[in-house]
Length: 342
Ligand code: PEP
Ligand code: MN
Image (cartoon, rainbow, N blue to C red):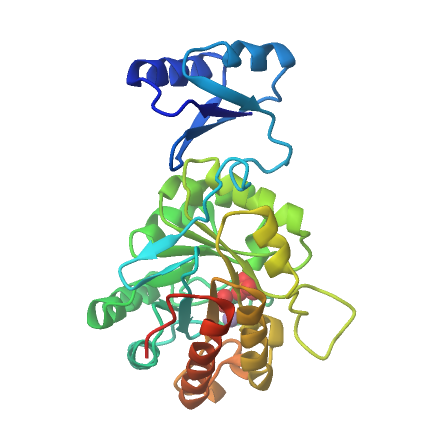
């Protein structure tokens, strides 16, 4: 349930209210509005009696049943858009962010070269997988901790925060020790133990949509991270399975307006994994921007033809530069105040 406090509630009443929420077996999630404080009391479905009980407490203005199955992700509990804030930029609430880099970290030269040019062309974050979830156990699995060290080196040189995938709960501590943002991939989007562990880490989480996930299931996956007390979740539409084989997955552009209507969380597009082919990446990225996405995550590699994973979809540097230029031109048309800098 959602408890709305009266404007200017006394501190002792607020503290007593929080204590009572806990005593009744709920977990309070406090969200400060302009005039009022909203407290999401998350737990078992509230009875009419328990709602009346809270209504009668001093400083309480309203008690509302949260109608959505996802609570903390809903606008009801959090009426302001969530904004991911990094030293290099923001995403959400009118701010747009680009994360870019290779699919996987392959060697020092490759990741440093990519980091330098993605920064030069205006990205706010560097991507690169060190632990790669591959369809085949014989395919390149990533450099592991060595890859994390190389990402940290690229960050030290360029100042770009890094996002990298974590594939198992027992790796969260290691990956969080290096990464600024944890990525949870499509294949792990309903790995609830991993979602909880990422939530506990306190690092922002970039959560990809599972390839067979409904949007409601996607929001419930985000809820696992949020319910661990971690408010920084970015939802990434990266293509879903359909009957169409012309693209690797089908980018569900409608996910952007639907999710934005249902949640305050930033919504991004990953055009690379949806496309599976370089020439489709820029049009899909621009479709995402036009639909209202708060950011994109794009794969680019200094020499894509030699890439150890996802070679066909990674952009060459000049293609990435052109994509950034097109995004910069489009952003003002969709009312994104903070366009990505050149
Ligand atoms: C990736 O970002 O390299 C990746 C594996 O993405 P996804 O989980 O969306 O397939
Ligand atoms: Mn990839």
